[in-house]
Length: 431
Ligand SMILES: [Zn+2]
Image (cartoon, rainbow, N blue to C red; front, side, top):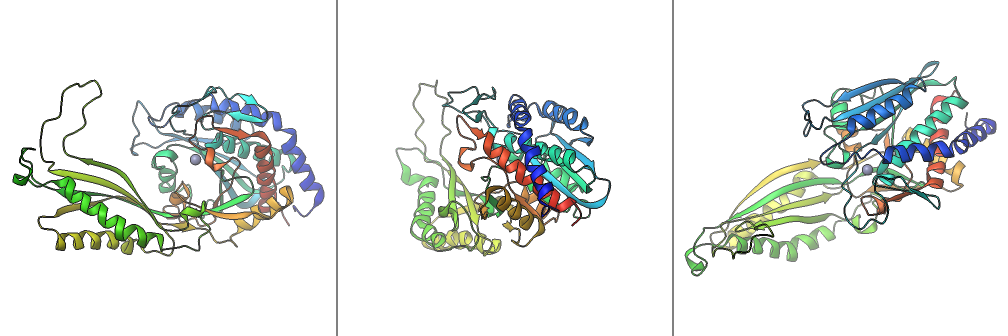
């Protein structure tokens, strides 16, 4: 039906006509400071969206992720799913945005929760990641429903908790309750800020682990009577520098990961702790002389769709065993903390081809297909929901996420909103 120029043109105009409403909605969302951690104002933002979408004929469900990680009476993990049925049976298209934002941090010159509009940009924490995307999907859906009230199927819009801290009180919880079952939802668009002309097909995998080296405490003036766990960890780091990092750099992927540096396996040493705990800044004393008996690092390994997680873990296990064989008294533990499989939606999946066509119509260019270096809520939709027809597509410049003076361009939101409205027409109107 989007091949019908009159419908396409009407939809493009209907989104453009809502430019002011889009600005206002984005500002309203930014002004609710849904900081995570701790996870505040979740109920307020869900209630605000419930009223807004309820007035437009959406059925509303407010869902608290009771019992999920971080859910408490002080900071309940609230989610909203709004559902608008068409006039007859058809597919369900779901827009999923997270409503939480990360801490403000330093270096702002704008009010982080002011939603200030200046020179075509709206500023604030979450402007780009991803309240701008959430507002855009709502305006796109409203424009579509007003223009094509006789549509088939269902439009769903969700705003979910805790994406920034893993999504367990948000999309993971909803997926476990069946909300992302492919019998219920057929197409998912996550309006994360991946740039308005790019379609994000998925993400690399993640494995987090803690490695601990063990020593023996002794007086620091006689280190030969103890065994220094930090020196043992030094041997681990040395082995990483000489063998593991070069090995990871040699593993390249065919996934279109952006930026280019992430087109290979990577490993970050997230933290290192050894010996006596650091004292608070106000403590003025000297440390006690001790040989450290424990040293721990946390590693954050990002792996490729071509890699098997058992091989990924095996590389580190073999490295530690090699050190143990070569180094007297080397003892260690390794503990898995967290893992996520890589995922990538096929380029010929219906949601991908539909959004690609809409981008060509609105922006007169072919989309770029990308894969995210880090994970986002698609992981839960894929693994728990078993729903493969899912992408991230939304306005905003990815590099601005989590930065001071975060902003979103109004024009980018309008352009993406037009893409979303055309995608709805393609998926929900008869051909
Ligand atoms: Zn985000």
